[in-house]
Length: 446
Ligand SMILES: Cc1ncc(COP(=O)(O)O)c(C=O)c1O
Image 1 (tube, rainbow, N blue to C red):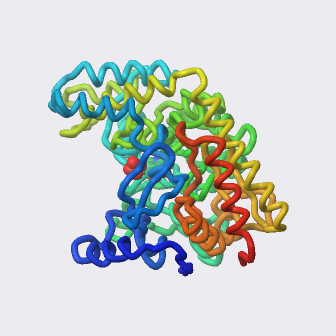
Image 2 (image 1 turned 45 degrees about the vertical axis):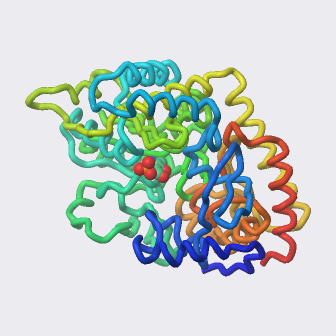
Image 3 (image 1 turned 135 degrees about the horizontal axis):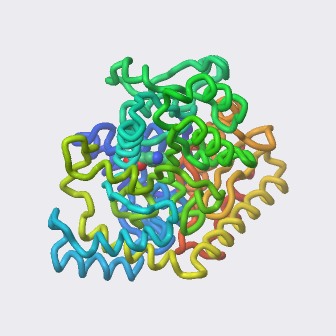
């Protein structure tokens, strides 16, 4: 676990953390926020505005984590503050039909061409869970294929080889070790899961030739966002589309991270791939908990009431206040300059960081483009998949870098598996500050 000198005063964070451990497991509500990542303990954040956050001791940071990408408009955007207070004043939720959910869905469909219809959920995990159920019902098949190193939320069947592991535990590409990510899952759950390496066309061709006819779905992240930021090789997603179509297997594109981030229509627009079903979350709600499943009527209407329906219930589905936020958020993201700005600011940050590493002779690459990227300490020119990540990335050195950056006023998770996020609130000046901090943090880093 990385230790840090912690030059900033974090006495209040420390006090809160001690208190937190009396009531919360590990003092947090998700292990990725606790001491396992933020050793010796988490920084308690108390306030956010624009691109900035402040901790319990009053320290200011530029936030490049942005709630794991949920805060596409930064913190406390004034238009969203107004939307939320108006929605709250008129009733946040009725669990009944509302015009708010229609307005959100109409905007969603305008931006995502594959969304003939949409169903809102409360989280990305619920969305992927529902997508798989729909795919199984639609095809009448039980099995599905997931890729090594892809995370699709915490639903049982997805929790196979989503975490990284030491290289000696991985098995071979042809015969990968099947490693559950959680206790408490019956091993038989994974009998229906076919595991494949990602970014490897010939492996996918072979598996689908053998087993394609029995697969309900192939689920993939379009950009691997849970091993940092790993881009698909040229033509890979397009070939996956052809292969799945040929064997009657549905393609589920998990855009929980990439949706509304790279383009109005997410990565499916950016890479020109038409999925059968796609899932969304994070940036959709600009900080509010929401997910979505989108696709053609022929598949999604299986949820319509009837004896043979695909069941999807939820007290908070289409939460009124959240739907108002979604509509306002999508309106802002529809502005012509929104994605141009996200890409320009992100690309400037990437270029600046690359230049720092070059000048300081640090063996690190910056991978990704525009609004999302990751730094890898590696001898490699690129990281292409799960195995590259497990074998060739020095995640401990990355953690040390981020702990230094935290001391220099840059907020980011020290976990190398996540990624740097640019929101519409970030400016060129924020990028400049990041690059200067990175330069300082690299001094003597080893
Ligand atoms: C690609 C992907 N799918 C699904 C999920 C699950 O989303 P949530 O955390 O909102 O349940 C995540 C979360 O990080 C994700 O990265």
